[in-house]
Amino acid sequence: MQVVILPSSESIGDYAADVILRGVAERPSTGHTNTGHTNYVLGVATGSSPLPIYEALERRWIPELASISAFALDEYVGLPYSHSESYHSVIDREVTTRLRLDPSKVHVPDGFADDPAAACLAYETAIQDAGGIDLQILGIGGSGHVGFNEPTSSFSSRTRIKTLTPETRRDNARFFSSPDEVPLHCMTQGLGTILDARKVLLVATGEKKAAAVARAVEGPLTSMCPGSALQLHPDATVLLDEAAAAELTLTDYYRFVFDNRPEWQR
Ligand code: F6R
Image (cartoon, rainbow, N blue to C red; front, side, top):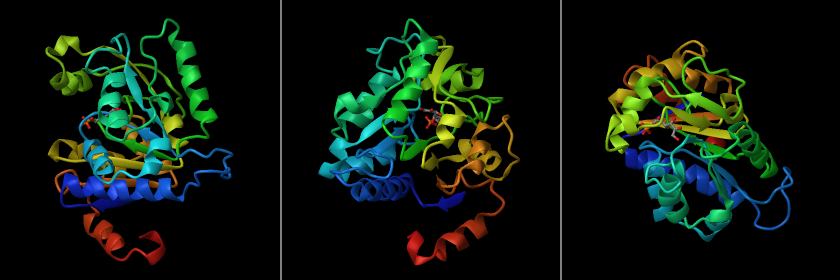
């Protein structure tokens, strides 16, 4: 993993936007790539962590962004799409509208499906049909979850229904009028689905994330910290502010690597 420690959320947003805009610009607008698909495919997360990325992309919008496809990581089960905190609504507000995406190319798991198992399979198929995810944006929960893959999630899991931990429900209660309103279940891309993305950018800010970040980046590979699965990914970058990096042991080395990165990595 490449660990990049930056001074502020805003600089994290700009760094991530640079990577995404470069990827979008490199994708030809006509003709086929080696995946047989022309659209850049962005994996999007909800929650607070990625907001500076969407803000930076909105500020630095380029017309090529309008043609990308997007896939959300997860959705609550049983929350109507129209609920302001359903991830359908959040993605619509924070991603589709801000980045002026074509809503027909923005996908969110169907947590309201009559047949959830079929909906999970259909989501996996839709990602494959789009050519796979070029870059997946991730946050990390206090439990170490990425997506809603809570502790003990299989590293090879695919999109499926999970039960949220009490810790995650407490963390997310801030978005609801009462903690009991936070759904018990979610539909989430699996760790195997996330590991298939060609590039992964995990963002974490603030001291509350420091322990989970240290376990994911420097801890053993363990399903007890689902974020540690990213150690298996060949192109994963972790963008942190100082507070989220506070419990890492190799911060001097990460800074040294970043300051001395070869020209081709810049
Ligand atoms: C959101 C998601 C979650 C969040 C995580 C951190 O789609 O899948 O894994 O990224 O819970 O949430 P924030 O960023 O709000 O601290």
